[in-house]
Length: 147
Image (tube, rainbow, N blue to C red):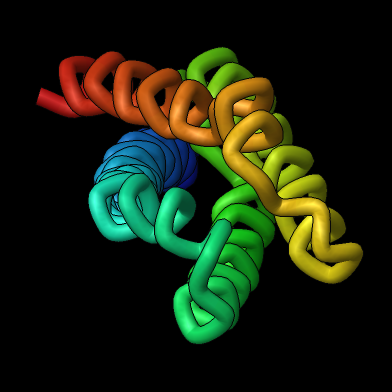
């Protein structure tokens, strides 16, 4: 009987320990994915800022911009599909909200490109890069929790 109790307690301790290891691994993996996404957003920002302005008057730049917008939209959707660990639910929600705003902005840019309405006033009135800045700030918050 004593042996069964000891085995039961040891089993419970092992399960609890495994849960902690799994939680830590999930957090590390999520932070890695968030870092990768933030890097993609940052690269998108640096490559797209001037390209948007050039696309107003240059058809080849417009096609390049359209391609980059579609790729970023795909990256946003992939990130939004992640399941964050419990301890990062709130920050993931914030980042997901900003990512959704970025996706909405991308859709608006794509629509204007298709309709031939990409001009300097549109670019000034719809600053796509604001969402990029917000996403990078939330990533910094996630990163600080991961350290």
